[in-house]
Amino acid sequence: MVDESSSQESAISGVLARNEKRNWAVSPSDVGYHFGTSGFSVAIATAVTHPLDVLKVRLQMQLVGQRGPLIGMGQLFVQLLNNEGPRSLYLGLSPALTRSVLYGGLRLGLYEPSKYASDLVFGSTNIFVKIGSGAISGAVATALTNPVEVLKVRLQMNPNSTRGPIKEMSKIVSEEGLKALWRGVGPAMARAGALTASQLATYDEAKQVLVKWTPLEEGFPLHLISSTVAGVVSTLMTTPIDMVKTRLMLQRESKRAGSYKSGLHCAYQVIRTEGPLALYKG
Image 1 (tube, helix red, strand yellow):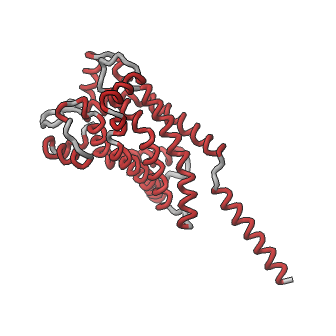
Image 2 (image 1 turned 30 degrees about the vertical axis):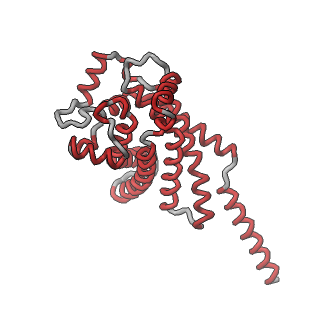
Image 3 (image 1 turned 135 degrees about the vertical axis):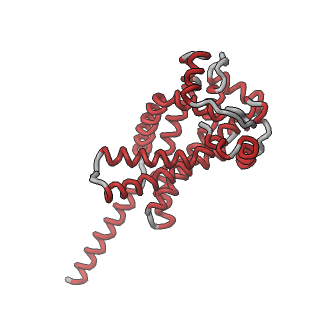
């Protein structure tokens, strides 16, 4: 009886273990569901916040290679409306939406397989594995969608362009080569990895602190405040990388910014010629 009981327990344990492993496996339908829902939600957020992204890129390209008084976001907003019209706030929207669907879908679609692979290799799914999986999925998604990001930034800085996104991309390839579509991909991948890692870690810590030191309990207000804290911290951490990425992608758009050899060289030149705070333009 003891042997029979032991064998039954072993069989049950084996089934549970196999079920747990199967739960980690990702089916094509799961990937499609995550891709679709993530891509759609990111696209909605992109459409709402796109004018702010245009302002950010314009601010990042202020006084390239120079020191001097900078125009603030409010003043730049008024200038754009007066000089270029409301349409200027939506320059590059088509590639931005395309990228948001692809990037949002790929990042979340690759997250679960990355976590599953880490579990197979390390036998663990702790917070560090989740952060690493998020960083890897974000970096890969960024590398794959970098051409659309380059196109978006170019259009945001070129209000006089009469070409559509497809013709603009063809122009970039014909004049600068296919390699130009991956300008700034290194800083872009580093930013995606740092953004995902810092967001996850900060969100988790902020949530724990709020639960411990405030009356907040599990629910929408707790998630909203924790997400806001994580967003602010991750933005402060990744803004310098984002600024370097923008400068590299727009080298052909600015004669002063035409000599950056790499992301590190760009950061060094910005600090030397424009001052350390220039890394936080925008």
